[in-house]
Image (cartoon, rainbow, N blue to C red; front, side, top):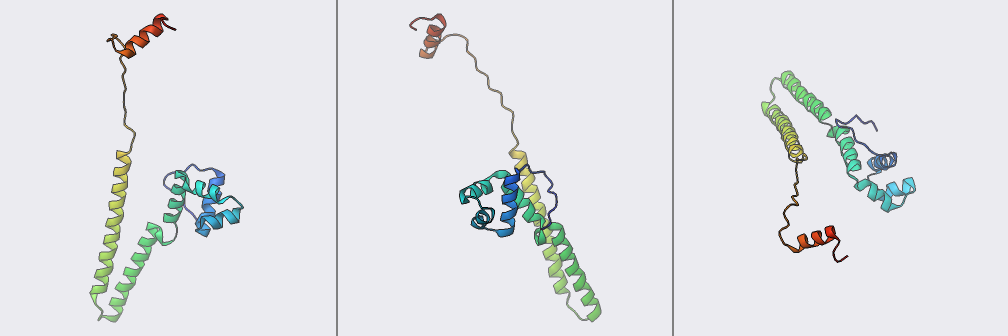
Length: 157
């Protein structure tokens, strides 16, 4: 199975990588456990890790017709073929080509919408700065203040 480097590097342990690659080939956690001679619980725990899921998703979406570039080339080839068929026959309908162009445009717009949504999600989940300030001055007579005072002075210990 050929894979391409993902846009982001995923840090993953060699053991988890082996389990992830086996899962990509077998598509079944039990089969992976049997193939690698591991406890099924270990396999499911490894597959549940965030970095393993990210790796599996990136490989899945970069391979075969899930790859957006391969999908784009296939769609372009299909449109080109329809145009050549229309030119050769001189009597074809442009409806097929219009539908293909509409589908191609919709796919492109859907991809852009998802990329924008992903970027927005990344922006909103970015860590925000927070400063916590605790002021411990002025004993106000509360029970906590009385306890602190007794601990400081050593009374009742």
